[in-house]
Length: 397
Image (cartoon, rainbow, N blue to C red; front, side, top):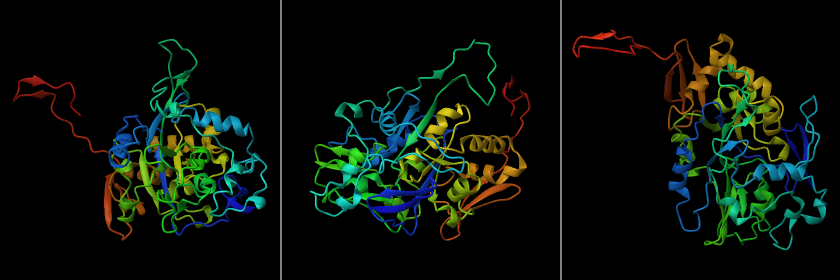
């Protein structure tokens, strides 16, 4: 049995393999307050990676409406129900079992190797979606929940009696990936140079244990090719210093790609580390599952905290308040507002940033400027009467 330290749950936990963190870790931050579910990210990914036979049902990137949407069907409800309700301690330590601990498995008797008869994946709590569970990626779209209210009810920014929000999802390229931990033939591996989790399709023997083990439903079986397939983190673009396809094509400019480090090694001049570790405004998705996912979300400010806390763990209220202060222009949070402006501003990966009096500036891995955005959007006022067209303007700003 390997004991690994998972900083997101604040303690050591069980995992099939010894801890082996990569030299750099692919990471991302998504601002859920800006996602409009235009699905441009989904389509850009699909036309790039999943347009072949047998991939019709695959969306390596999808956007689902919470609380009712899910792809595959009820992926989150199913795994949360299997784990049961557990509490976070006041010290930020998760007191419950992860998916690697819930079955109280004797990992020492099932040492991970490349023998397919050694089904160490049996020790991972999970489930395999049915074929029809992949058939409705837009189920529940735009369906709200909450309390009824009169049409003239005033709604402030702190609480909405009726709410929903959009949750864009890709493979989290987890530090302790369940797909890799569950594969009987070790066809899934984590690259040391960037932490991207890849699947060797030539080595895959169609056990589909990665599909069962991944609680996020991001390892998907192709019945035509007869192997599993998954998001590759757009590694060809990452190797060129660029952001993944779904990041570049995001119309809402909600995504920031970069490297994420452990708290003690955080580089707060880098945008992802800054938002995760310094501003503490971006939180992992279902950290209690134990995978240490590397996609982080800025929680929506219009959603009740009790729902968000079971999704993103402790720290939701603080993250929401920090985001509100940055959004309204509090000087103390000017740096955060600057990095939020930089999101989606360039196809190049921003590895360092600074905020001046007038603009936020992003730099690539070589220190070259790749993005400049104003801290205040310039406005121009035109004359209300246009003598050339003998007409009055309704909008002069």
